[in-house]
Length: 123
Image 1 (tube, one colour):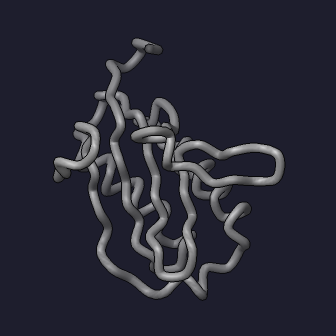
Image 2 (tube, one colour):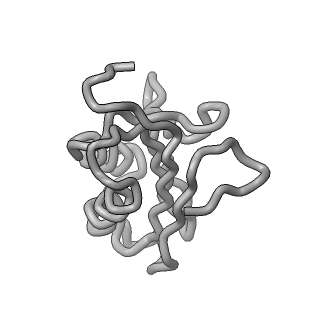
């Protein structure tokens, strides 16, 4: 995990380059919701998070989906999460990336761990 100096102390783990976004399939709003549902279903994800300044989000009709940003062609899909400490963080990030990768047709998936909490803490 790397911690860029220009960002918050959150861990940013970047995916490897993949195919261009043109073959993604569903429109960005539907794709963002699908990614959010997939990520939130992981047992170590306490919740989705907007990251620094709430920047990780997708605008949908009438609302903002916080924690997932689906950009334009060639841009990575960004996911920001708060994790529980029931599993090793790198293993959880790798599992999240693996579960999202088939949904985004090879587009890079960047996962930001914004915070962690002790399982059952609820904070």
